[in-house]
Length: 123
Image (cartoon, rainbow, N blue to C red; front, top):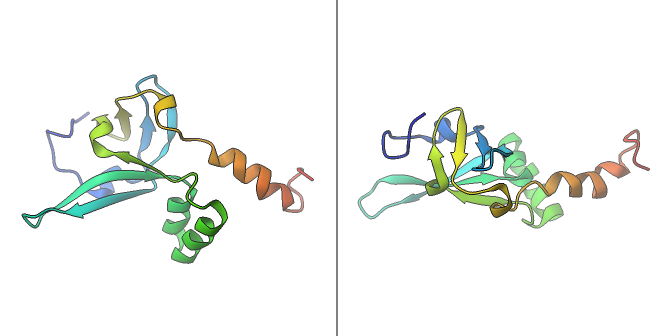
């Protein structure tokens, strides 16, 4: 495992990585990353984005727009890269699961969308 101070990371090193909290809970995978240009002209990765909207946007931009209209950003979460204690196939975060407010989207999607799909067994 590497720490953030050891290496230079790209979005490819972070995308799809499993996020594990300090209390050893899997809270999802990184769906997108955010970056900002610094005054010195360098591009620096700042946040990891998790949630169904970011994931849909990777499939097709119109899907991200549709998911945003359905979900209104309520399940989109940004986790600053400074929260990562160790990098690798699994990104180890410095706080506990409860501090990240994630994992609610699956329940909402099942209750409000999937239940209306014929054959879902939810009607």
